Image 1 (tube, helix red, strand yellow):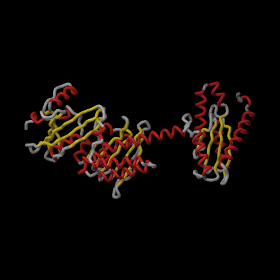
Image 2 (spheres, rainbow, N blue to C red):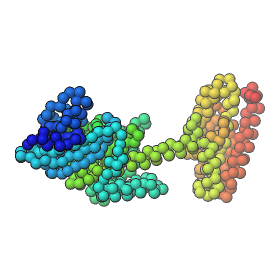
Image 3 (cartoon, rainbow, N blue to C red):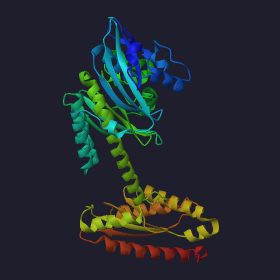
Length: 463
């Protein structure tokens, strides 16, 4: 076959790929048989050496299991294929087409590979999908945008994806590298699935497995395991992960990272899927995972903002705004309490002296120690920083006798520190009573306790 003449008609970067099919049905030995001028110039610019025809493709192009699968499908199954994918490690976007060629050799297939690489995404190419794929992606976007309960919605989306893929199991796992942890965000299991929920499979060692996934992905947008040949490949590059899949009887897998703004938020996979629809599934999930990652990133951002707006960042307890909202909810009946419950005000004696004499860092340390003691003693209640040196607690279901024990524990633990001294005021709230009145009484009693403290220790009074 005159490949040079064939390629001369193409202006874009174009080459001819050959794929060898082995007697056992597997394939490999993928080579770049010939290239046009644009391809040869590109190889010289990128590799800084001339292109040598009939070379193994990995000498010039990133080695990629999905690309090899596309070459095989085009060369031997006669499928014209198109894909527009990111190359995350290179920070580039690849637009590629593969067109099947007739072959005069029984065990060698050929296809034409046309490609272009750009640094920026082409939105028209990104959205250029089949009608079925577009419909599935749009359906997912509509569900996500109209959601009031993100976890329920994501579980619905997982079930939709599971059905599209004809799979047994579909799951999103979020990974927090800073906290050295991972957790199941959502999943869907087929009714006849023998697999346990993913939560039951996560142990102390599972996070370490997740840390190997990015290296296994390399510059691929995903990992697709269709058969034993692919599983053998995974065994060769990541035996621990492969063994964990085999142990749970996973015979096929589509695995995508969830990346957003250069950060890997987690991973999504479908297990034991319909391998006859591999190309369509890859196309669908390639874009769907982009929107899923975007929604998860927004959700995590809103969660962080909610935490920032509700937590006192110095002490880690809840702030005054959250305290006021809780009181309003109790008064309005939105928050149901177990009667009797306790309201406690605890004020730090001597914080101003510590700040003035030892600096605000020492005062901050004192506040943190006080908050830690309060959280430890009232472990089953809510602790709020009501003001500079004042804390308020609501202990649900805590009656008078237990409250006396806790206040005593508070004094005992404070006595073990260098400078934490609490002035404490309490009030029990019975059914039908108003928490706002209890707060007023507890606050008044706290100041009585503070005055009594300074009467006993006049030398510690500081103005």
